[in-house]
Image (tube, rainbow, N blue to C red):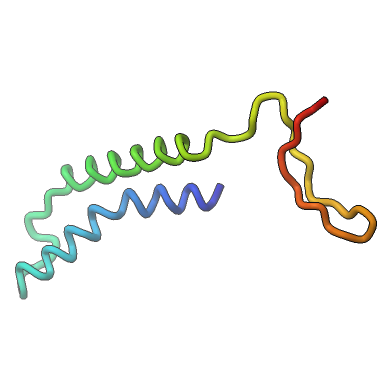
Length: 88
C-alpha cells in the first residue's frame, strides 16, 4: 500500500518538478515562485495521479474471484511462497 501511495505522490509532484526545472533553465536569476501557475500545476498533478491510479488498476486487477490468500509457510523444512489459491 505504501508503494501505491508513493507512486501517486510522485506522479502528483511531477508537474511541479518539471516546471521548476524549466523555470530554472529558462529564467536565470529570476525568483522561482514569482508568477507560478499554481492552478494549472495542481490540476495537471491531479490528472497525472488519477491517470496513474487508473493505469495501476488496469495493469494489476487483483486476485481472481473466489480465491483466498495463503501466507508463506514451512512444509518439510522448506519455505512455500504465499499467494492466492483457488478454493476447491
